[in-house]
Length: 456
Image (cartoon, rainbow, N blue to C red; front, side):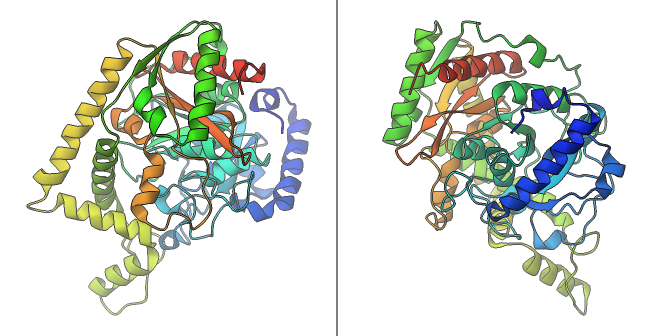
């Protein structure tokens, strides 16, 4: 598949050929289920003839049926563009298709979608990760030049790692959330999923910047990073040793090989430990569920989407939400309502916010001594469908990624090898807030080392 950098050099006719080629490839690989809907030629009049980019089904695109992969939003048509879509259009890119995802971005496997599951292109019996599994699978399968996903607790980085592509989560506020369906407002960020690090930097530059309609948007001018990438910069990289040792043996081995290659290339490696990741998990699911329970009160059958047949208002609310939401969404709404309820707010929500502050301070302390932090992305490679029937076991798949969202830091996942079953293994760099330039430089350095065959 042509890279985004290469695609930006194409003329109008060549882009049209690219679109037609993608349509054929998508049809040939329909069984993967990466796309909910492929956009037709009629959309060209609306969005121009830009480079086609896959869009997760929770980002507003004018005239699209944006449903968050949920039954409750069937029939909803987006009346406006998200800021990231307008930014794409202004730079010669265009939304091309709705990518599948876990319902309302709640999940780690893209199994909870109303439209059915997405398959991992490397092994159809395995999950592609989640919640941006459709976006990652599309890029990995060569049926998208690049894609946009959203990352609340690792939902860009984890599927990128499972599918063998690059996924990047910006600093909170660097990319506007205007037009992104809110799951957990203090954690959500839109991010690029691409074939390589340079493409991720290019797409990040296109979508980043201040948005006056978004109160969470960082009010500062965006400085481009893609035109200043420097893979020769020597960095101090802190490896989180206890995270690495907790990962399975094959991830541990491949990651240690990558660390050695970085050291051989002149980067300084130091080793640090962070507090038990159980604190990250507990704080994240309390905060995320609490914010979701408040955000999801809008889905009541009155304003948009599906409305259940009923005889009175109370029955309409109850039936619409009962029939419209899937099991995982209901579980998190109930959890969030519980931790915000009288008598439990102090015991759970306030403690979770204190834990969040503690997690952020740990990152600040380590990043005062290092330019970047390196950790595994996941404790295992992509698992088989149905193998994580326990919700708590599924939640642990994000054990190394959720702390980054709690701290609001930028991070990037990139492939560093494969396991014995030829399934991709990813590594994660974490940077200082607004330190995207250093983050991309470090990731590009490792990518170049791996491409030269300096590690296994």
